[in-house]
Length: 257
Image (cartoon, rainbow, N blue to C red; front, side, top):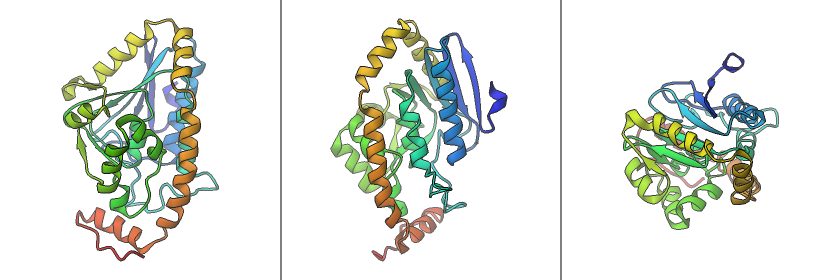
């Protein structure tokens, strides 16, 4: 199965499926990577042997988002298929999933980290919605998923400041469900998935459908709103400055135009 994918590894262990992002060190994403992950999840959903799956990553970062410094257009409309619209496929997966967050999950990478049902993280993990630091509006359904997870006020704090939240604070806030040493992140994610897989599969599917009812629709509605705001904020001078200042690791020299 793994041979059919370019940027991910796909495997299984018992009743647990594993998708490993393989674009180290930072695992920047684009339409192709998101679609590969979605294809793998849909394949797991069709596989009666798989009852839960783990999303993990090689390298230093879990996913550092889109590589704006080298590809400023990453994430913009490509042949009418916008990156974040493609990502809504992920939210329609049917089986429980666990994210193994071993490093930074930044921008759209945070959106990807919030897609699974649970997150296992370590102190070295970093979570940031840094869109406003880049000069544009958040995306990847984060305006829906982040407040749902940690509450409106904490989500506002992350959106408005763009600050990075460490693994320990993420655990305190409920952004991460399990906190373990770095070396144990993937093992603990597999352990949690295996524990879920011990429950009756049809009962799990039924319960998850109830618990996440409207979740994918809510994420999709949020994405439409986000895209409306992203389309114009990405055309501003501030966005160009944001990408430049972020790459140069300095505060933005904003012009409000």
